[in-house]
Amino acid sequence: MGSLLLIVYGMKAHNLRAAARFRKKLFEREVAGCTAALQKDPANAAAHARLAEVYGEVRDWAKAVEHGRRLCELESSEKNRRRLAALERQAQG
Image 1 (tube, rainbow, N blue to C red):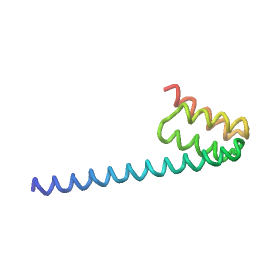
Image 2: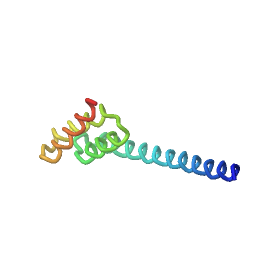
Image 3: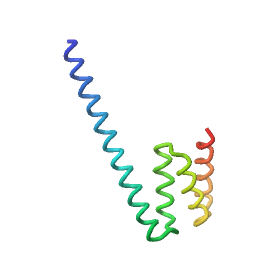
């Protein structure tokens, strides 16, 4: 019974590591794509919105707020201002 539990827990740990690697690759791909879009067009509001969201997901609040602010400069809608306010609250702790 004990060895079966070790096998099950080992499989679960392996799956968790694989999932973490997959999420990291997705994150890197998202950041690279948005960064490339911003190099072509620094006023690309959609890229700033996505970067704010992606950096928020990984709790990099400084970068999330930076892109949220840029988004609000480009498109100052109520939705974007609320999004930025939420990021700023998270950044403060």
